[in-house]
Length: 116
Image: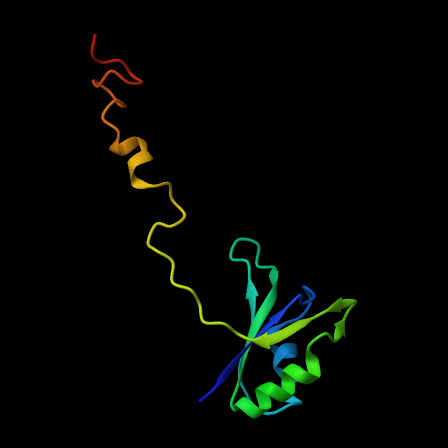
């Protein structure tokens, strides 16, 4: 069973390989990933590392949390489970979208003409 670790406040120059090698000093690393912006391809400044044992993960957290990397004090702690978002959570509530309103659109008295 692997233990997932959150690594935050990373310099933008840190890559998956450097993250893996730095955490590898504390034990076996299953995976290391720096999160990237999909539009720009630039690092988002945080990532996740999966250690193969909980003991190795604890050692890495104690050894690396607060360490200064290129002038930035990194944050290293246990990753929290991802919270499920409701579908369409970023959209406006369904009752306020123009497509659901009766008074908007062609022939309904809204924008574009309609009733007299």
